[in-house]
Image: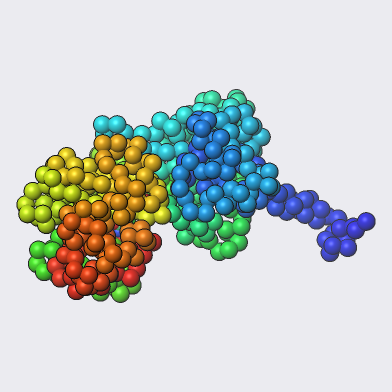
Length: 478
Ligand code: UDX
């Protein structure tokens, strides 16, 4: 048998070696909430070697994930679940009792916009905290990943402390998640950075434990920023506010270009060459939607107002307003391109998801434009490659087409509002044969305008007065 000496360690080093061994042990992880964030996080943690129990109150969702069928579309997730399944390291359940004995409890539930208000609804975060509290020990760590208003982390810790077994010191880190839908796995395994919001006497041990969870990504060189709770809470909403502001900035420039005769795509390219500005997130078009950017800027403003700091974030009201105006602009444009009115105009809406490579239709510009057009008397037909079931669920009043061709059949106006690859590469010559009038609105500056014009289309792109001869932008959004 090999002795410690043979490994080059002295007997005195044995406890240190045991500690090191212990530190390398994969962890038992609980993930609460299996939406876009939780399901991807659970699968990625299991992929990285941890044993994961993921809990969701929705039995249907847990069963679908357990069967390897995500209840939403996220590229690569089904394959990742299939890869992890044979290891036995990933369990989906509705039973919180299965989380007993976990080293780390991740809170990954949603914080949607409140009904009838702008603030975030934190109900699910507190419910998750109350549910895990009985299973906590002084060795376990709760890690909040949800996007929450300032002050939530401290209050969540108090909530759990009141419900945890009496002798337990409740330990909590706030660790916001920055994943983008469509590239969520990549963003989880290779994030731009980790943010650890820590507070209290166990902070050092909390950091060390979370480092063990993320050992693989940290070893790859992912930066880690340690902050207090408030800063960590703010990092996420500040980042999303910045991104939203950047998009609305270029869309404000688009408004000027449309009126004054400029080309916003060229403008973005030119200012984007300045490294301090950068080209990313300067994609002008129908603006931002989704489950994060719109509600996060509103919740951030609402919280600032509660704190008596409304003025500091008043500009976000304008950011939101510019974004909304882009949707209104497309609605107006349809009328403008159809002789002045909406009544009876047949509009093909290509896209329903808030962005390509996602089936998420939350606050989707495409669906909101489609609904506004229909309200004004237009006949809309919507098609999206992945988001049809979700779109039909949230906007059942709209007409849906079987495919792009079906949507465009006899259309007076075609509007590309989500830049799916199949729309970007659609053949303008073939499509011209199925429409009633070859008029296209490029709501994402994603099409090769000159090819559409050459095929006889009236091509209109947002923010480009001379769009007919312009080339599409080359960048991707991410
Ligand atoms: C966003 C943040 O990027 C992510 O870091 C955070 O964790 C969650 O919120 P996501 O909502 O998945 O991610 O989408 P994102 O890629 O940021 O796009 C948001 C919206 O902005 C989409 O509707 C997209 O079409 C739009 N957008 C994006 C533009 O209109 N122009 C751009 O240049 C970029």
